[in-house]
Length: 261
Image 1 (spheres, rainbow, N blue to C red):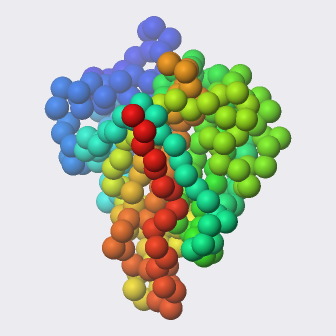
Image 2 (cartoon, one colour; image 1 turned 45 degrees about the vertical axis):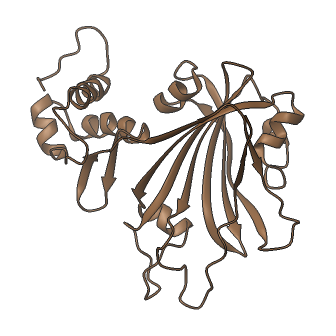
């Protein structure tokens, strides 16, 4: 990890990101290994801590690294990946059983950062529509969905009722039928923000960052190669503490996947 100059116009944080990624690819840094501190990396690269933090943030967004609150930054383990030629989401809030509702948290248009752009096969900085929702069962938070859609494909998406309809249903209505979805599943510890949104708590009812969550990244395509959506879904892990000691844990029937050949 040499001291970085900027002779070719490439930002230093990008060069730090590439250097760390190269070390991971070469297994100089291995899954589960803790990175040196930001101060150590700043001294090694000859840059500020803010520059180091920016380079690391892109790798965290990509799922290559992860942070443990109060402990440090670590190399992530390989993801489990599933590839379905056709995947349909079946979700019927009107059916008998737990009441399912969706709370819209973010609906915005913004430039795509590195991870989003790469996942959607678009140039970094192209505009995307971001739709972030919190899904609840019997008013208990279960899953946080954060989806990004190329603006050029769905410029009218934000005019739709994003709480009443599933995004895939809207794509179908807009002439963008889903044909394929690739899922990457891993376990991550919840940070304070996720713990608050999902109401992760200890048995004493105290808010608890660090509890496990199931994180699912989904790349969704229409036709053969056109990426229509990239989403991160963060769900409470099975077997963890209940949201509150007096609330009965609901049956985990939120997203039902029907796989067809």
